[in-house]
Image (cartoon, rainbow, N blue to C red; front, side, top):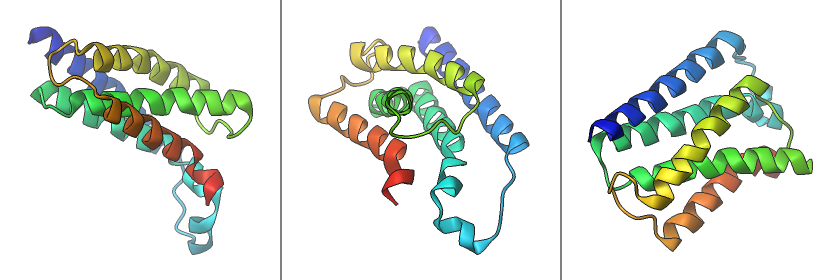
Length: 145
């Protein structure tokens, strides 16, 4: 129980730090024509992924049944972002430091989700497919619109 809470608090601290970093470095535009451009959505990918991480950490802290699914969604989203960038399908819109930090959180998140380390609920095959699909959708959304 103590390890679960410490792990969730560490993930929350990382997520909150990345959210603060996002708001301190991003210029938010209110120009209506920008809402329909992929660059506008790419700008928010760090915020979306950080919110995924803080949600997963909160569920893990509460020992909720959906914690493993949320951790898998977060982990696969980061891995798919990196893979799609390496393949040239999408472009990186995050600083390298943010990618390294998120990747360092993604690997333990996937380990926790698949091994059911904290006995929340075993990740099913359906949950695996859902987390892969959500990760791909979030990663590919800017080029799909």
